[in-house]
Length: 339
Image 1 (cartoon, one colour):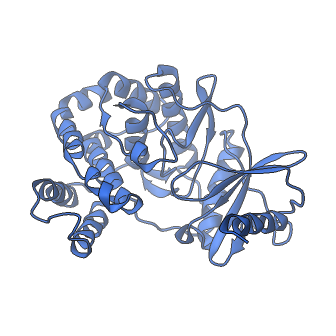
Image 2 (spheres, one colour):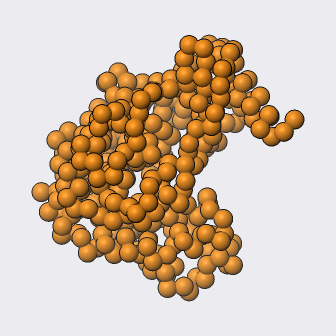
């Protein structure tokens, strides 16, 4: 029996635990972190997803799924997880890893770069979502730090430099500048006074799809937790209001972290639409440049895990420094965009 046969057998077993006994077709879905399968059954279509180990503890699953169910109650276009008839829980375990099953949402279109109606809808939806979840108390427990916390990202980079000297030289000009930027964020960027809510955690055009230029589906809540709102806003701006030279492929890490150029007019559209739906304070505005830098640095440094050694230098290169410098150059215009 080959590896693919073994995986297929495991998927069928998991589906059986969700009460699905007959499968007409099974195909791989897109994504860079978690295996996904599109499951066609006689009467319905599903998306089956395997969560990474760190996202699989039952209290974490309960947190994420209660957030999704709350959004569904509020009318947001989310796919509610299916319960296993055997356990009554919305995940089936294979060792320490959890599997989730969702109804498949048909008729979705990807984000079209520069499409102002989609930008506006993405921002409005994010603001409404933050508002809907501001006072919500989820089930389970998930006291996580934000994904790209500068101190953690800095430690990860320094550790990586120590264990892989063949890839990067610690004295390289770019490496020194990247570390300097992280040091500045550790020193200057504090989230204590920022607006907080439960955030999506990965609000990008890979996870937001559209129907007739309105948000038609919101996917992948693995990173949802209570954080500052700039956590989502910075990602939303980069993926909906910035421009990039290549197409965006949610299953390709190189595509997801490709250089992005700030488009101030599109930034204005996004922020104006968001602010109609939820709080955006002067302190939030002052810290937006820090949040953008945190995202650019964190995304590239974490991407080092997902590319072969021969491509790692492309993650920490002049294009990263250019994006960071652009944020510095455009601080005044960013402030104007918020007013």
